[in-house]
Structures are given as structure tokens and as C-alpha cells.
Image (cartoon, rainbow, N blue to C red):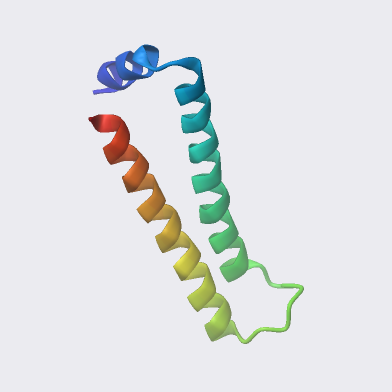
Length: 76
């Protein structure tokens, strides 16, 4: 499976590989931002905990949706 992924990556042009790396970095940014909002004790904005959890979960779900969209687009 990993060999297939690397072979598909080698077939891509330099621009496509660069965009894939940028997309993965954006996925990680959204994911860790969601976790940071949930677990940061001294959050700089005055929000109730329930809203912080809701916002964090929305960001994490959005990151997962982006990941699967990229994964399915690169699988084909």
C-alpha cells in the first residue's frame, strides 16, 4: 500500500506534489487548531467551554473532510 502511494507520488509533476504537501499542511493546521482551541486552558478569547468544544470539533471535522477529499482525489 505504501509502495503504491510512493509510486503515485513519483508520477505527479512537481507542482502537483507541491500542492499536495501544502494541502497536507493545511489539514494539519486545521486539526491542531481544533485541538488547541479545545485543550488550551488560557484561551485568549472569552468563550464558554461548550462553545470552545463546539468550535474545536467543527474544525477537526472539517480537517477530516478535507483529508478524505484529498485522499480520494489522489487515489484515482
